[in-house]
Image 1 (cartoon, rainbow, N blue to C red):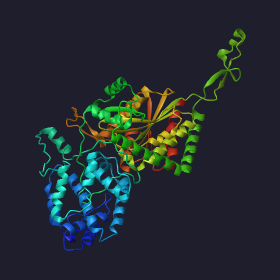
Image 2 (cartoon, one colour):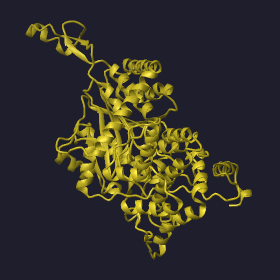
Image 3 (tube, rainbow, N blue to C red):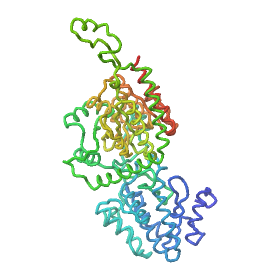
Length: 584
Protein backbone atom coordinates (compact mmCIF):
# COMPACT_ATOMS: atom_id res chain seq x y z
CA UNK A 1 0.00 0.00 0.00
CA UNK A 2 1.49 3.30 -1.03
CA UNK A 3 1.51 6.05 1.56
CA UNK A 4 -0.67 8.33 -0.56
CA UNK A 5 -3.37 5.61 -0.68
CA UNK A 6 -3.87 5.56 3.10
CA UNK A 7 -7.24 6.53 4.47
CA UNK A 8 -7.29 8.99 7.35
CA UNK A 9 -7.62 6.15 9.88
CA UNK A 10 -4.82 4.15 8.24
CA UNK A 11 -2.58 7.20 8.17
CA UNK A 12 -3.17 7.69 11.88
CA UNK A 13 -2.34 4.05 12.59
CA UNK A 14 0.77 4.19 10.43
CA UNK A 15 1.98 7.29 12.26
CA UNK A 16 1.66 5.41 15.56
CA UNK A 17 3.73 2.52 14.16
CA UNK A 18 6.42 4.88 12.81
CA UNK A 19 6.57 6.85 16.08
CA UNK A 20 7.10 3.68 18.14
CA UNK A 21 9.72 2.36 15.71
CA UNK A 22 11.55 5.69 15.62
CA UNK A 23 11.74 5.43 11.83
CA UNK A 24 9.58 6.66 8.96
CA UNK A 25 11.14 5.13 5.86
CA UNK A 26 9.31 1.80 5.81
CA UNK A 27 5.89 0.41 4.94
CA UNK A 28 4.28 -1.18 8.05
CA UNK A 29 3.47 -4.86 7.64
CA UNK A 30 0.52 -4.57 10.01
CA UNK A 31 -1.84 -1.84 11.17
CA UNK A 32 -3.96 -2.44 14.27
CA UNK A 33 -7.63 -1.53 14.53
CA UNK A 34 -10.22 -2.37 17.17
CA UNK A 35 -13.37 -4.30 16.28
CA UNK A 36 -15.34 -1.03 16.20
CA UNK A 37 -13.01 0.39 13.54
CA UNK A 38 -11.08 2.75 15.81
CA UNK A 39 -7.30 2.76 15.82
CA UNK A 40 -5.64 0.51 18.42
CA UNK A 41 -2.93 2.78 19.78
CA UNK A 42 -1.21 0.24 22.01
CA UNK A 43 -1.00 -2.55 19.44
CA UNK A 44 0.22 -0.13 16.76
CA UNK A 45 2.92 0.83 19.24
CA UNK A 46 3.78 -2.87 19.60
CA UNK A 47 3.91 -3.27 15.81
CA UNK A 48 6.41 -0.40 15.68
CA UNK A 49 8.48 -1.85 18.52
CA UNK A 50 8.57 -5.26 16.83
CA UNK A 51 10.00 -3.51 13.74
CA UNK A 52 12.50 -1.70 15.94
CA UNK A 53 13.84 -4.79 17.74
CA UNK A 54 13.38 -7.56 15.17
CA UNK A 55 12.96 -5.99 11.74
CA UNK A 56 10.27 -6.62 9.16
CA UNK A 57 12.23 -9.22 7.21
CA UNK A 58 12.41 -11.58 10.19
CA UNK A 59 8.78 -11.04 11.15
CA UNK A 60 7.62 -11.55 7.58
CA UNK A 61 9.56 -14.82 7.33
CA UNK A 62 7.98 -16.07 10.58
CA UNK A 63 4.42 -15.44 9.45
CA UNK A 64 5.24 -16.97 6.06
CA UNK A 65 6.18 -20.26 7.76
CA UNK A 66 2.51 -21.18 8.28
CA UNK A 67 0.90 -19.11 5.52
CA UNK A 68 -1.87 -21.17 3.96
CA UNK A 69 -2.15 -23.58 6.89
CA UNK A 70 -5.69 -24.47 7.91
CA UNK A 71 -4.96 -22.94 11.35
CA UNK A 72 -3.21 -19.82 10.04
CA UNK A 73 -5.56 -17.37 11.75
CA UNK A 74 -5.03 -19.04 15.13
CA UNK A 75 -1.24 -19.17 14.67
CA UNK A 76 -1.16 -15.50 13.65
CA UNK A 77 -3.08 -14.43 16.76
CA UNK A 78 -0.95 -16.50 19.13
CA UNK A 79 2.23 -15.20 17.47
CA UNK A 80 1.15 -11.65 18.18
CA UNK A 81 0.63 -12.50 21.84
CA UNK A 82 4.20 -13.82 21.91
CA UNK A 83 5.55 -10.75 20.11
CA UNK A 84 3.60 -8.37 22.34
CA UNK A 85 5.23 -9.85 25.43
CA UNK A 86 8.71 -9.70 23.86
CA UNK A 87 8.41 -6.12 22.59
CA UNK A 88 6.94 -4.93 25.91
CA UNK A 89 9.79 -6.41 27.95
CA UNK A 90 12.45 -4.99 25.64
CA UNK A 91 11.02 -1.47 25.56
CA UNK A 92 9.70 -1.00 29.11
CA UNK A 93 13.07 0.02 30.66
CA UNK A 94 13.37 2.82 28.08
CA UNK A 95 9.70 3.82 27.97
CA UNK A 96 8.00 3.39 31.41
CA UNK A 97 4.71 4.88 30.11
CA UNK A 98 4.26 1.63 28.19
CA UNK A 99 3.00 0.01 31.39
CA UNK A 100 0.08 2.44 31.60
CA UNK A 101 -0.67 2.01 27.89
CA UNK A 102 -0.70 -1.76 28.29
CA UNK A 103 -3.07 -1.53 31.26
CA UNK A 104 -5.46 0.70 29.30
CA UNK A 105 -5.38 -1.71 26.38
CA UNK A 106 -6.21 -4.64 28.67
CA UNK A 107 -9.11 -2.71 30.19
CA UNK A 108 -10.45 -1.81 26.73
CA UNK A 109 -10.15 -5.46 25.66
CA UNK A 110 -12.95 -6.34 28.10
CA UNK A 111 -14.98 -3.13 27.70
CA UNK A 112 -15.33 -3.46 23.90
CA UNK A 113 -17.49 -6.58 24.04
CA UNK A 114 -20.90 -4.91 23.82
CA UNK A 115 -20.00 -3.70 20.32
CA UNK A 116 -19.21 -7.13 18.94
CA UNK A 117 -21.56 -8.64 16.39
CA UNK A 118 -23.20 -12.03 16.70
CA UNK A 119 -20.75 -13.48 14.18
CA UNK A 120 -17.75 -12.12 16.09
CA UNK A 121 -19.10 -13.57 19.34
CA UNK A 122 -19.89 -16.98 17.96
CA UNK A 123 -17.06 -17.46 15.47
CA UNK A 124 -14.10 -16.96 17.78
CA UNK A 125 -11.32 -19.48 18.21
CA UNK A 126 -11.74 -20.59 21.82
CA UNK A 127 -8.02 -21.25 22.42
CA UNK A 128 -7.03 -17.82 21.14
CA UNK A 129 -9.73 -16.18 23.22
CA UNK A 130 -8.63 -18.03 26.36
CA UNK A 131 -5.02 -16.95 25.82
CA UNK A 132 -6.04 -13.33 25.16
CA UNK A 133 -8.35 -13.20 28.17
CA UNK A 134 -5.66 -14.73 30.40
CA UNK A 135 -3.01 -12.27 29.14
CA UNK A 136 -5.09 -9.17 29.73
CA UNK A 137 -6.50 -10.42 33.02
CA UNK A 138 -2.95 -10.87 34.29
CA UNK A 139 -2.10 -7.32 33.16
CA UNK A 140 -5.09 -5.96 35.11
CA UNK A 141 -4.15 -8.01 38.17
CA UNK A 142 -7.31 -10.11 38.01
CA UNK A 143 -7.61 -13.82 38.64
CA UNK A 144 -6.85 -15.89 35.58
CA UNK A 145 -9.75 -17.72 33.90
CA UNK A 146 -10.18 -21.41 34.63
CA UNK A 147 -7.83 -23.23 32.25
CA UNK A 148 -6.83 -26.80 31.54
CA UNK A 149 -3.20 -27.82 32.26
CA UNK A 150 -2.57 -27.60 28.51
CA UNK A 151 -3.91 -24.03 28.36
CA UNK A 152 -1.99 -22.98 31.47
CA UNK A 153 1.24 -24.30 29.97
CA UNK A 154 0.65 -22.51 26.68
CA UNK A 155 -0.19 -19.27 28.52
CA UNK A 156 3.17 -19.37 30.29
CA UNK A 157 5.06 -20.32 27.12
CA UNK A 158 3.64 -17.32 25.26
CA UNK A 159 4.94 -14.94 27.94
CA UNK A 160 8.56 -15.88 28.75
CA UNK A 161 10.30 -13.74 31.34
CA UNK A 162 13.17 -12.95 28.95
CA UNK A 163 12.53 -11.71 25.42
CA UNK A 164 14.39 -13.75 22.77
CA UNK A 165 17.14 -12.17 20.70
CA UNK A 166 16.48 -11.69 16.97
CA UNK A 167 18.47 -14.79 16.01
CA UNK A 168 16.48 -16.82 18.56
CA UNK A 169 12.97 -15.50 17.90
CA UNK A 170 11.83 -17.79 15.11
CA UNK A 171 13.20 -20.97 16.68
CA UNK A 172 11.75 -20.04 20.08
CA UNK A 173 8.24 -19.43 18.72
CA UNK A 174 8.27 -22.55 16.55
CA UNK A 175 9.42 -24.56 19.56
CA UNK A 176 6.37 -23.34 21.50
CA UNK A 177 4.10 -24.35 18.64
CA UNK A 178 5.74 -27.76 18.37
CA UNK A 179 5.55 -28.41 22.13
CA UNK A 180 1.85 -27.75 22.18
CA UNK A 181 1.08 -29.51 18.88
CA UNK A 182 -0.03 -26.31 17.18
CA UNK A 183 2.30 -26.40 14.15
CA UNK A 184 4.88 -29.03 13.20
CA UNK A 185 6.71 -26.94 10.62
CA UNK A 186 4.72 -28.30 7.66
CA UNK A 187 1.86 -26.34 6.17
CA UNK A 188 -1.35 -28.36 6.13
CA UNK A 189 -3.75 -26.60 3.76
CA UNK A 190 -7.44 -27.21 4.09
CA UNK A 191 -8.54 -29.88 1.64
CA UNK A 192 -10.77 -28.52 -1.09
CA UNK A 193 -14.11 -30.11 -1.88
CA UNK A 194 -14.76 -30.49 -5.60
CA UNK A 195 -18.29 -31.11 -6.84
CA UNK A 196 -19.56 -31.39 -10.39
CA UNK A 197 -23.18 -30.34 -10.52
CA UNK A 198 -25.54 -29.71 -13.40
CA UNK A 199 -28.92 -28.12 -13.85
CA UNK A 200 -30.90 -27.04 -10.79
CA UNK A 201 -28.26 -28.30 -8.36
CA UNK A 202 -25.62 -26.17 -10.08
CA UNK A 203 -27.85 -23.10 -9.75
CA UNK A 204 -28.47 -23.79 -6.07
CA UNK A 205 -24.81 -24.49 -5.38
CA UNK A 206 -23.75 -21.23 -6.99
CA UNK A 207 -25.86 -19.40 -4.43
CA UNK A 208 -25.20 -21.63 -1.44
CA UNK A 209 -21.55 -22.71 -1.51
CA UNK A 210 -19.30 -19.62 -1.77
CA UNK A 211 -20.02 -18.48 1.78
CA UNK A 212 -18.65 -20.46 4.72
CA UNK A 213 -19.38 -19.96 8.38
CA UNK A 214 -17.29 -22.01 10.80
CA UNK A 215 -18.80 -21.97 14.26
CA UNK A 216 -18.08 -23.15 17.76
CA UNK A 217 -20.55 -24.69 20.18
CA UNK A 218 -19.29 -24.04 23.69
CA UNK A 219 -21.19 -22.39 26.52
CA UNK A 220 -19.61 -19.13 27.60
CA UNK A 221 -21.09 -16.44 29.81
CA UNK A 222 -20.05 -12.99 28.68
CA UNK A 223 -21.01 -9.88 30.60
CA UNK A 224 -22.37 -6.67 29.22
CA UNK A 225 -19.76 -4.43 30.79
CA UNK A 226 -16.16 -5.50 31.07
CA UNK A 227 -15.87 -8.95 32.56
CA UNK A 228 -14.88 -11.44 29.87
CA UNK A 229 -14.84 -10.09 26.33
CA UNK A 230 -12.94 -10.84 23.16
CA UNK A 231 -10.39 -8.39 21.86
CA UNK A 232 -9.24 -7.51 18.40
CA UNK A 233 -6.11 -8.76 16.69
CA UNK A 234 -3.37 -6.39 15.56
CA UNK A 235 -3.93 -6.88 11.85
CA UNK A 236 -6.36 -5.27 9.46
CA UNK A 237 -7.19 -8.75 8.18
CA UNK A 238 -10.35 -9.71 10.08
CA UNK A 239 -10.45 -13.53 10.05
CA UNK A 240 -13.10 -15.79 11.46
CA UNK A 241 -12.45 -18.48 14.03
CA UNK A 242 -11.44 -21.85 12.60
CA UNK A 243 -12.64 -24.37 15.13
CA UNK A 244 -15.44 -26.87 15.13
CA UNK A 245 -16.33 -29.33 17.81
CA UNK A 246 -17.09 -32.89 16.76
CA UNK A 247 -18.57 -34.76 19.70
CA UNK A 248 -20.54 -37.98 19.95
CA UNK A 249 -24.08 -38.07 21.29
CA UNK A 250 -23.13 -39.24 24.79
CA UNK A 251 -20.49 -36.52 25.17
CA UNK A 252 -22.85 -33.82 23.94
CA UNK A 253 -25.57 -34.89 26.35
CA UNK A 254 -23.13 -35.04 29.27
CA UNK A 255 -21.82 -31.59 28.35
CA UNK A 256 -25.31 -30.06 28.24
CA UNK A 257 -26.25 -31.67 31.55
CA UNK A 258 -23.05 -30.53 33.26
CA UNK A 259 -23.62 -26.94 32.11
CA UNK A 260 -27.40 -26.58 32.59
CA UNK A 261 -28.32 -29.20 35.19
CA UNK A 262 -30.45 -32.32 35.10
CA UNK A 263 -33.52 -32.61 32.91
CA UNK A 264 -36.97 -31.79 34.27
CA UNK A 265 -38.35 -34.54 32.05
CA UNK A 266 -38.04 -38.25 32.82
CA UNK A 267 -35.93 -40.01 30.15
CA UNK A 268 -38.92 -41.60 28.41
CA UNK A 269 -40.84 -38.32 28.31
CA UNK A 270 -37.81 -36.51 26.90
CA UNK A 271 -37.38 -39.13 24.18
CA UNK A 272 -41.05 -38.81 23.29
CA UNK A 273 -40.74 -35.02 22.99
CA UNK A 274 -37.72 -35.32 20.71
CA UNK A 275 -39.42 -37.94 18.53
CA UNK A 276 -42.44 -35.70 18.05
CA UNK A 277 -40.75 -32.30 17.73
CA UNK A 278 -37.27 -32.89 16.28
CA UNK A 279 -38.51 -33.66 12.80
CA UNK A 280 -38.49 -31.87 9.46
CA UNK A 281 -36.22 -28.82 9.60
CA UNK A 282 -35.25 -29.85 13.15
CA UNK A 283 -34.30 -33.43 12.27
CA UNK A 284 -31.21 -34.46 14.23
CA UNK A 285 -31.67 -31.79 16.90
CA UNK A 286 -32.25 -32.46 20.60
CA UNK A 287 -34.15 -30.90 23.50
CA UNK A 288 -33.25 -30.24 27.11
CA UNK A 289 -35.54 -28.88 29.84
CA UNK A 290 -33.88 -27.80 33.07
CA UNK A 291 -34.40 -25.74 36.19
CA UNK A 292 -30.66 -25.47 36.79
CA UNK A 293 -30.52 -28.19 39.45
CA UNK A 294 -27.13 -29.96 39.31
CA UNK A 295 -27.26 -33.60 38.33
CA UNK A 296 -26.06 -36.02 41.02
CA UNK A 297 -25.02 -38.46 38.30
CA UNK A 298 -23.05 -35.90 36.27
CA UNK A 299 -19.95 -34.52 37.97
CA UNK A 300 -19.32 -30.91 36.93
CA UNK A 301 -16.40 -30.45 34.57
CA UNK A 302 -13.92 -27.59 35.08
CA UNK A 303 -15.65 -25.77 32.24
CA UNK A 304 -19.05 -26.26 33.89
CA UNK A 305 -17.69 -24.92 37.19
CA UNK A 306 -16.30 -21.91 35.39
CA UNK A 307 -19.66 -21.39 33.69
CA UNK A 308 -21.40 -21.49 37.08
CA UNK A 309 -18.99 -18.87 38.46
CA UNK A 310 -19.51 -16.56 35.51
CA UNK A 311 -23.28 -17.08 35.59
CA UNK A 312 -23.32 -16.03 39.23
CA UNK A 313 -21.37 -12.88 38.34
CA UNK A 314 -23.99 -12.05 35.74
CA UNK A 315 -26.75 -12.69 38.28
CA UNK A 316 -25.07 -10.17 40.59
CA UNK A 317 -24.99 -7.64 37.77
CA UNK A 318 -28.67 -8.27 36.99
CA UNK A 319 -29.59 -7.63 40.63
CA UNK A 320 -27.40 -4.52 40.81
CA UNK A 321 -28.95 -3.11 37.62
CA UNK A 322 -32.48 -3.64 38.92
CA UNK A 323 -31.63 -1.98 42.24
CA UNK A 324 -29.86 0.95 40.58
CA UNK A 325 -32.96 1.73 38.49
CA UNK A 326 -35.46 0.73 41.15
CA UNK A 327 -37.62 3.86 40.91
CA UNK A 328 -38.13 3.42 37.16
CA UNK A 329 -38.83 -0.29 37.54
CA UNK A 330 -41.30 0.26 40.36
CA UNK A 331 -43.12 2.84 38.25
CA UNK A 332 -43.35 0.39 35.33
CA UNK A 333 -44.68 -2.35 37.63
CA UNK A 334 -47.38 -0.05 39.02
CA UNK A 335 -48.53 1.10 35.59
CA UNK A 336 -48.60 -2.41 34.14
CA UNK A 337 -50.39 -3.82 37.19
CA UNK A 338 -53.04 -1.12 36.94
CA UNK A 339 -53.59 -1.76 33.22
CA UNK A 340 -54.02 -5.50 33.72
CA UNK A 341 -56.23 -5.15 36.78
CA UNK A 342 -58.55 -2.61 35.12
CA UNK A 343 -58.90 -4.81 32.08
CA UNK A 344 -59.79 -7.81 34.27
CA UNK A 345 -62.48 -5.77 36.04
CA UNK A 346 -64.04 -4.74 32.73
CA UNK A 347 -63.85 -7.97 30.73
CA UNK A 348 -63.63 -10.87 33.14
CA UNK A 349 -66.76 -11.80 35.09
CA UNK A 350 -66.11 -12.82 38.68
CA UNK A 351 -66.67 -16.43 39.67
CA UNK A 352 -69.87 -16.98 41.67
CA UNK A 353 -70.26 -19.22 44.71
CA UNK A 354 -73.31 -20.52 46.58
CA UNK A 355 -74.03 -18.48 49.73
CA UNK A 356 -76.68 -17.60 52.30
CA UNK A 357 -76.94 -14.04 51.00
CA UNK A 358 -76.49 -12.28 47.70
CA UNK A 359 -78.43 -12.62 44.46
CA UNK A 360 -81.21 -15.23 44.38
CA UNK A 361 -80.39 -18.28 42.26
CA UNK A 362 -83.73 -19.37 40.68
CA UNK A 363 -82.42 -22.86 40.12
CA UNK A 364 -81.87 -23.41 43.87
CA UNK A 365 -84.97 -21.76 45.38
CA UNK A 366 -86.76 -25.11 45.70
CA UNK A 367 -84.11 -26.30 48.17
CA UNK A 368 -85.29 -23.86 50.88
CA UNK A 369 -88.78 -25.34 51.61
CA UNK A 370 -88.02 -28.94 50.69
CA UNK A 371 -84.51 -29.42 52.12
CA UNK A 372 -84.43 -26.59 54.63
CA UNK A 373 -81.31 -25.33 52.77
CA UNK A 374 -80.96 -21.56 52.97
CA UNK A 375 -77.98 -21.50 50.55
CA UNK A 376 -80.06 -20.35 47.59
CA UNK A 377 -78.07 -17.23 46.78
CA UNK A 378 -74.99 -16.51 44.63
CA UNK A 379 -72.24 -14.07 45.50
CA UNK A 380 -68.96 -13.18 43.84
CA UNK A 381 -65.83 -14.84 45.13
CA UNK A 382 -63.36 -12.45 46.68
CA UNK A 383 -60.52 -14.18 44.87
CA UNK A 384 -61.20 -15.48 41.39
CA UNK A 385 -59.40 -18.51 40.12
CA UNK A 386 -57.10 -17.50 37.27
CA UNK A 387 -58.63 -17.87 33.82
CA UNK A 388 -55.25 -18.19 32.09
CA UNK A 389 -51.54 -18.61 32.73
CA UNK A 390 -48.60 -16.77 31.18
CA UNK A 391 -45.38 -18.37 30.01
CA UNK A 392 -42.70 -15.72 29.61
CA UNK A 393 -39.92 -16.91 27.29
CA UNK A 394 -36.67 -14.93 27.23
CA UNK A 395 -34.28 -15.17 24.28
CA UNK A 396 -30.95 -16.09 25.91
CA UNK A 397 -28.75 -16.32 22.81
CA UNK A 398 -25.46 -14.49 22.35
CA UNK A 399 -27.17 -11.74 20.34
CA UNK A 400 -28.58 -10.52 23.69
CA UNK A 401 -25.19 -10.18 25.37
CA UNK A 402 -25.29 -6.40 25.26
CA UNK A 403 -28.60 -6.16 27.16
CA UNK A 404 -28.67 -9.06 29.63
CA UNK A 405 -29.40 -6.89 32.65
CA UNK A 406 -32.24 -5.15 30.80
CA UNK A 407 -33.87 -8.43 29.76
CA UNK A 408 -33.62 -9.85 33.30
CA UNK A 409 -35.25 -6.66 34.61
CA UNK A 410 -38.03 -6.90 32.02
CA UNK A 411 -38.70 -10.48 33.04
CA UNK A 412 -38.88 -9.49 36.70
CA UNK A 413 -41.21 -6.56 35.98
CA UNK A 414 -43.62 -8.67 33.94
CA UNK A 415 -43.62 -11.48 36.50
CA UNK A 416 -44.29 -9.12 39.40
CA UNK A 417 -47.07 -7.27 37.57
CA UNK A 418 -48.84 -10.50 36.65
CA UNK A 419 -48.43 -11.89 40.16
CA UNK A 420 -49.97 -8.70 41.57
CA UNK A 421 -53.06 -9.52 39.49
CA UNK A 422 -53.01 -13.18 40.60
CA UNK A 423 -52.15 -14.43 37.13
CA UNK A 424 -49.80 -17.44 37.32
CA UNK A 425 -46.56 -16.84 35.41
CA UNK A 426 -43.62 -19.06 34.53
CA UNK A 427 -40.37 -17.51 33.28
CA UNK A 428 -37.96 -19.50 31.11
CA UNK A 429 -34.91 -18.71 28.97
CA UNK A 430 -33.98 -20.48 25.76
CA UNK A 431 -30.79 -20.93 23.77
CA UNK A 432 -29.20 -23.67 21.70
CA UNK A 433 -25.79 -25.25 21.26
CA UNK A 434 -24.38 -28.52 19.99
CA UNK A 435 -27.74 -29.24 18.44
CA UNK A 436 -29.58 -28.97 21.79
CA UNK A 437 -32.31 -26.40 22.28
CA UNK A 438 -32.30 -25.75 26.03
CA UNK A 439 -35.20 -24.31 28.04
CA UNK A 440 -34.09 -23.16 31.49
CA UNK A 441 -37.01 -22.56 33.86
CA UNK A 442 -36.01 -19.59 36.01
CA UNK A 443 -39.34 -19.28 37.85
CA UNK A 444 -42.14 -21.84 37.89
CA UNK A 445 -45.84 -21.11 38.36
CA UNK A 446 -45.78 -21.97 42.06
CA UNK A 447 -42.45 -20.27 42.75
CA UNK A 448 -42.93 -17.09 44.78
CA UNK A 449 -39.26 -16.08 44.61
CA UNK A 450 -38.90 -13.84 41.58
CA UNK A 451 -35.22 -13.25 42.40
CA UNK A 452 -34.42 -16.42 40.48
CA UNK A 453 -35.17 -14.55 37.25
CA UNK A 454 -31.85 -12.81 37.81
CA UNK A 455 -30.18 -16.13 36.97
CA UNK A 456 -30.77 -15.20 33.32
CA UNK A 457 -27.65 -15.05 31.15
CA UNK A 458 -27.08 -15.06 27.39
CA UNK A 459 -24.94 -17.61 25.58
CA UNK A 460 -25.09 -19.75 22.46
CA UNK A 461 -27.48 -19.70 19.52
CA UNK A 462 -31.26 -19.51 19.14
CA UNK A 463 -33.34 -21.99 17.13
CA UNK A 464 -36.57 -20.06 17.65
CA UNK A 465 -38.88 -22.53 15.92
CA UNK A 466 -37.80 -25.48 18.03
CA UNK A 467 -37.83 -23.32 21.18
CA UNK A 468 -41.47 -22.43 20.47
CA UNK A 469 -42.37 -26.10 20.06
CA UNK A 470 -40.47 -26.93 23.25
CA UNK A 471 -42.41 -24.23 25.14
CA UNK A 472 -45.64 -25.77 23.90
CA UNK A 473 -44.50 -29.21 25.04
CA UNK A 474 -43.61 -27.82 28.46
CA UNK A 475 -47.19 -26.57 28.73
CA UNK A 476 -48.41 -30.10 28.04
CA UNK A 477 -46.00 -31.52 30.62
CA UNK A 478 -46.68 -28.90 33.32
CA UNK A 479 -49.71 -26.82 32.27
CA UNK A 480 -50.22 -24.79 35.43
CA UNK A 481 -53.44 -23.97 37.30
CA UNK A 482 -55.58 -22.59 34.44
CA UNK A 483 -57.07 -23.97 31.23
CA UNK A 484 -55.92 -21.22 28.84
CA UNK A 485 -52.36 -20.20 28.10
CA UNK A 486 -50.58 -17.09 26.85
CA UNK A 487 -46.97 -17.40 25.65
CA UNK A 488 -45.02 -14.10 25.53
CA UNK A 489 -41.53 -13.97 24.05
CA UNK A 490 -38.96 -11.26 24.70
CA UNK A 491 -37.01 -11.49 21.46
CA UNK A 492 -34.99 -9.76 18.75
CA UNK A 493 -36.69 -11.92 16.07
CA UNK A 494 -33.37 -13.07 14.63
CA UNK A 495 -33.27 -16.91 14.53
CA UNK A 496 -29.75 -18.28 14.07
CA UNK A 497 -28.41 -21.71 14.94
CA UNK A 498 -25.18 -23.60 14.30
CA UNK A 499 -27.10 -26.75 13.29
CA UNK A 500 -28.15 -26.53 9.64
CA UNK A 501 -31.53 -27.39 8.20
CA UNK A 502 -31.09 -30.87 6.69
CA UNK A 503 -31.50 -31.54 2.95
CA UNK A 504 -34.99 -32.20 1.64
CA UNK A 505 -36.59 -32.76 -1.77
CA UNK A 506 -37.42 -29.04 -1.89
CA UNK A 507 -33.93 -28.03 -0.71
CA UNK A 508 -31.42 -30.72 -1.81
CA UNK A 509 -28.41 -29.01 -0.21
CA UNK A 510 -30.05 -27.94 3.01
CA UNK A 511 -29.31 -24.46 4.36
CA UNK A 512 -28.31 -22.60 7.47
CA UNK A 513 -30.90 -22.00 10.17
CA UNK A 514 -30.85 -18.21 9.83
CA UNK A 515 -32.29 -15.28 7.91
CA UNK A 516 -35.36 -16.11 5.78
CA UNK A 517 -35.26 -19.86 6.52
CA UNK A 518 -35.13 -19.34 10.29
CA UNK A 519 -37.86 -16.69 10.20
CA UNK A 520 -40.13 -18.91 8.06
CA UNK A 521 -39.74 -21.82 10.48
CA UNK A 522 -40.39 -19.65 13.56
CA UNK A 523 -43.53 -18.24 11.92
CA UNK A 524 -44.73 -21.75 11.07
CA UNK A 525 -44.28 -22.96 14.65
CA UNK A 526 -46.21 -19.96 16.01
CA UNK A 527 -49.13 -21.09 13.85
CA UNK A 528 -48.75 -24.67 15.17
CA UNK A 529 -49.09 -23.43 18.75
CA UNK A 530 -52.03 -21.22 17.87
CA UNK A 531 -53.88 -24.18 16.38
CA UNK A 532 -53.41 -25.94 19.72
CA UNK A 533 -55.18 -23.06 21.45
CA UNK A 534 -52.04 -21.35 22.81
CA UNK A 535 -51.97 -17.60 22.23
CA UNK A 536 -48.49 -16.43 21.22
CA UNK A 537 -47.30 -12.83 21.52
CA UNK A 538 -43.93 -11.11 21.43
CA UNK A 539 -42.28 -8.04 22.89
CA UNK A 540 -39.75 -7.13 20.22
CA UNK A 541 -36.59 -5.28 21.19
CA UNK A 542 -34.23 -5.47 18.27
CA UNK A 543 -32.76 -3.72 15.27
CA UNK A 544 -34.81 -1.96 12.59
CA UNK A 545 -33.86 -4.53 9.95
CA UNK A 546 -35.48 -7.29 12.04
CA UNK A 547 -38.78 -5.48 12.61
CA UNK A 548 -40.33 -6.91 9.44
CA UNK A 549 -39.23 -10.42 10.47
CA UNK A 550 -40.85 -9.95 13.88
CA UNK A 551 -44.13 -8.94 12.20
CA UNK A 552 -43.93 -11.96 9.89
CA UNK A 553 -43.40 -14.35 12.79
CA UNK A 554 -45.91 -12.95 15.31
CA UNK A 555 -48.31 -10.98 13.14
CA UNK A 556 -50.43 -8.44 15.01
CA UNK A 557 -49.58 -10.02 18.35
CA UNK A 558 -46.29 -8.17 18.52
CA UNK A 559 -45.34 -4.96 20.29
CA UNK A 560 -42.04 -3.17 19.76
CA UNK A 561 -40.16 -1.35 22.50
CA UNK A 562 -36.91 0.58 22.46
CA UNK A 563 -36.58 1.23 26.18
CA UNK A 564 -37.77 0.14 29.60
CA UNK A 565 -40.23 3.02 29.83
CA UNK A 566 -42.20 1.53 26.92
CA UNK A 567 -42.54 -1.93 28.45
CA UNK A 568 -45.74 -1.26 30.42
CA UNK A 569 -47.63 0.04 27.41
CA UNK A 570 -46.42 -2.71 25.04
CA UNK A 571 -46.80 -5.70 27.35
CA UNK A 572 -50.01 -4.28 28.78
CA UNK A 573 -51.59 -4.20 25.32
CA UNK A 574 -50.67 -7.84 24.64
CA UNK A 575 -52.04 -9.08 27.97
CA UNK A 576 -55.18 -6.94 27.69
CA UNK A 577 -55.91 -8.51 24.29
CA UNK A 578 -55.84 -11.94 25.91
CA UNK A 579 -58.15 -10.86 28.73
CA UNK A 580 -60.62 -9.42 26.19
CA UNK A 581 -60.58 -12.71 24.27
CA UNK A 582 -61.41 -14.58 27.46
CA UNK A 583 -64.29 -12.21 28.19
CA UNK A 584 -65.87 -12.53 24.75
